[in-house]
Structure formats: C-alpha cells, structure tokens
Length: 403
Image (cartoon, rainbow, N blue to C red; front, side, top):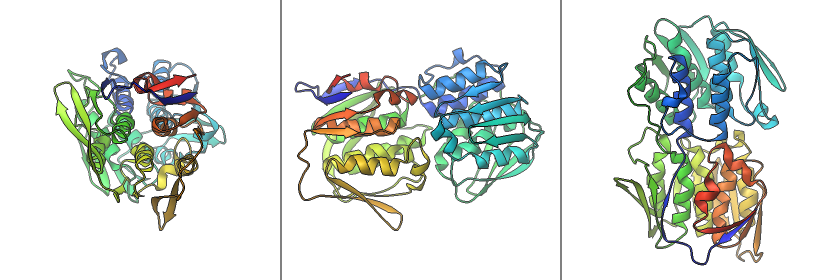
C-alpha cells in the first residue's frame, strides 16, 4: 500500500478513536466472571485482539483456542480457563509463542493448575485450586500480573501477589485495579505486592469504555509534524484511567498542546519544540514508535529510556524502528541502555520509503506519518487491525492511500 500527502489536506479535523483495547479486555473478563453479556459494554474495542478474546469467552464449550498474535487475550484467557477449570489448548502465531509466557504459567502452577507447554501450544489439564499468596516475576510483562488479579475474586479470601523484580508498565496494573473497582472488588497496589480484597464481581450500572489513548499517539505524531494543525480526538479524556494519557505531557516537548473540551481532547501544534528532549517510557512502551517517528521527522536529538521490553512485542520494535528510520536519514543508537536519535549529514534523496512492518501494527501506524514527506510503501497495512481496524480511514483526510 502506498500513501502520500494530500495537497489539499485539512488542518482542522475530527478523529474517532477505537475503544480502549486494554480496558475492553479487562472488562470482558470481569463481565464474563459475573455473567454480564458483552452487549452491555459500550464502546468495546473492535480490534482483532478483542475479537479473539470475545470469541474465546463466548465459546468455552470448545477445547482449542487460537489467538493469532494477541498476547493479552492469550494471557487473560489462559488465567480465565484455569480459574474455570476448562481443559483446553491455547495457541497462536509463531511470534506470539516466542513471547514471554513462563511467569504466568508459573503463577498458575503455584495455584495448583497443571499447564503443559510445548513449542506451539499450551494445554490446561487441571485448573486452579485457589490461592492466598503467590510470587510472580513482574519485569517482562504486566499482563501476567493483571491476568492473575482478574481471576482472583473467583476464589474465597484475601489474595496477595508478591511482585518479584520491578514491574514493567506499572500503570496497566493500576488500570486492572480500576476496572476491578468498577465491578466492586477492592485492591491495594504497591511496588512490592498487590492485595486483592475478598469479594466477587458485581454488575456495575455503567459499562462505558473510553477511547484508546495508545491509538491517539499517532494523531499526536501527525499534529507535531504539521505547524498550524489541530485535531479533535472525539470522546477522549485527559483525566483517564489509561496510563498512556501521559502522552499529553510527553507531547508538549514535541510542540503539541492538549485541551479538554466537551467533545473530546483538542490537540494543537504550538510550535514550541524541545530540540533535546529526554523521554522515560518504561511505563508507556506503546507510545514509543509514534514518538520516535515524530522526533525523527522533526530531526531533533531525542533520547529514550525504559525501552528494554520493546524487543518482546509483536516485533522487535527497536530493530524494526531503527531499520525503517534509517531510510529517513535518522540513526537510532544505543548507549548504556538509552536510545538516542542522530542524523546523517545528507538528507535522504529517495522519493519512496519501503516500510517493513514485521506484521506489527504500531510500526505500520508510526511510520505512516512520513507520508507527509515521501511516498511511503507499507508492506502489510492490514496489520493495523490488531488494535485499530479503522486507522487508514481515519488517516485519509491527510493522505492519499493507494492499495
């Protein structure tokens, strides 16, 4: 697919973001555990990942589940299936099966579950007996912790999850706790442990899912690269349970201001750019590709820390972004765990960038902003369906898109 800038693009526009994928997954598990139909969830994500989790929850009578490249639905459903004592097998794409799963499986085994592993599937042969205290390595993925938090209310008594090592993406644990609170279950979070108070999920009166802040990152990137542009992100809230709402503060460094309006968040290019920003994204890894693309487009000497787990995502995002950005004249270097952008003296002369997404939705969406400068060839544009199926439609006011 080729995309390139429209000559008559609009500087003022509105964007409809998908429902938050992260909130959707947590609410689907909680809803299933208290017998609520997904039809009551307003604003549910239409992503491929959400579809995989929803299909699994709707078909618990079958014994084989395939999640393609969806790590969150795999992990959440694995814990759900073990908690509900479902004897089943779970599988996914080759890349998904290579991603970290062992810490979740170890946590399930501490609770009495029997989970057999091989290279292409997991088999749950015996479910959870219950638990009072377990220890889980939190350094590779917050999903493992969230999965155990979500199923904890199914068992009697207060539960404790001891966090071994510094948690990755800690705001996602807070998000899980916030969703659980919505369903009437109280939790206590610290850097060392999580306490889930005794109680069971109760159907709340309102089940409205916020628009996705992670998806908003690409429109912040677009605005940062366009002096004078402003975009209204419909329904988005600056005060959000989503950790990636921190994007509004990060983007001030890239010349983008954010204002809450009755209809959503209005983002505007202010022109006030920090030419040497430093970003710590340990708690916001999904924002990294879009922010790197913005900085490279603006040719500013940005540095990034907290990116260690990007190698474990749908692709090795550090390698993928480095290779793609190099075509634009940007160099993504690494020194002592920090990543920084520098630039070749001579700008790129090629009229077209050939973007290799490695099937990673965030690589495709992040690199598409360079359509403002070049013709951009996206090798697998359909991969955006993992989180944002309507992305290219929402991108079209500014870009010609030739499929």
